[in-house]
Length: 265
Image 1 (cartoon, helix red, strand yellow):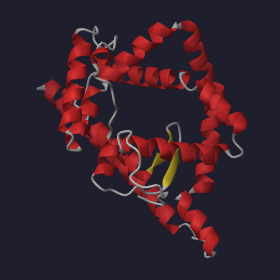
Image 2 (image 1 turned 120 degrees about the vertical axis):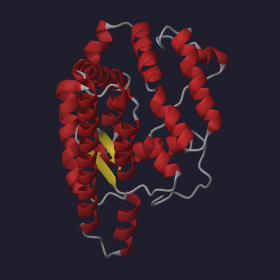
Image 3 (image 1 turned 180 degrees about the vertical axis):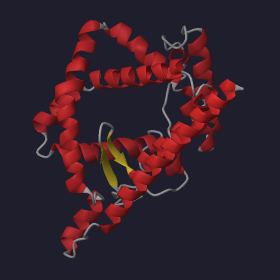
Image 4 (image 1 turned 90 degrees about the vertical axis):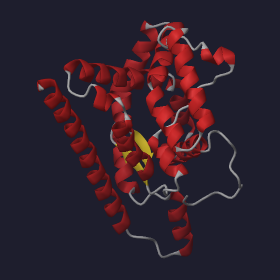
């Protein structure tokens, strides 16, 4: 009985946390809606193309994130590289990707893509058994390539509009839809309900999140340094690259159906 109450309490806490995040996002959207819109036709066109009504605030958050990256994330990522050889880092990446199976599988199903859902399930089965809990990507040798899906992508497939561009502290670039999808991913995570209350779950969850962030940052060191050297406006460059990458993920890597840039989805 005690465990049941604790589990229910943990699940309720997560639901309330997700609700608080949703309220904050709604507040951000409300502020964005009240932002002044240029009246000059040329300025209005650029404003709509950027779809970034919170740009002044977003730029301040971007500066904060970049300072955090320079002083903490980048040094930690470099230390991670020096400490672990490439094959170990690849094994860690494989394990983390395999552990993300529930999120991808559920969103494959929600998007009405049974073929991709079956491929995701098969990859998980093969890599968990033959790949030693996912540390080795054996499935790729049989043509079962990995892919990622999240609830933000599912919302896009369902026709939900992108919403304004957001630069979120610690998390980086998002659309409003992508940010809202993060709440959905948490609610769809089976572990939220299977083992919500114990400290072991919390430690494991936090540890995997930290390792995931550090590993991904370690793989972007040179790319970000190159952007910093060659971009006249790093903020605008990252905003553009984020949208290109995000739209490609939503289309499952397929080329766009038209060549006319979309102002909003």
